[in-house]
Image (tube, rainbow, N blue to C red; front, side):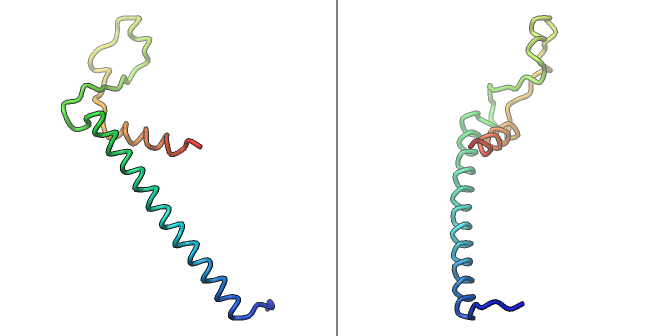
Length: 93
C-alpha cells in the first residue's frame, strides 16, 4: 500500500528521527557520566578497597537480643553495596 508522502517528506522525517536519536544518545552519555561520578564518590566516601570501618550486617538485627551475633555476621562494605545503592537511586522517580 502506497501513501501520499513524497520522497522529500520521507527524507525530512528520517532526518528528524536521526536528530532525535542523536539527542537521546547525548543525554544517555550525560546520564551515564552522572551515575559513574556518583558511584566514584560513594566508593571514595565508604573507602571501598581500603581498610574500611563500614560493614554490612548479614543477619537480622534481632540476633543482638539473643547474644548470637558474631564478627562472622558482618561483611566489609564493598563495591557490590555501592552498586546496590546506585541501582536503587536509578529507580527513584
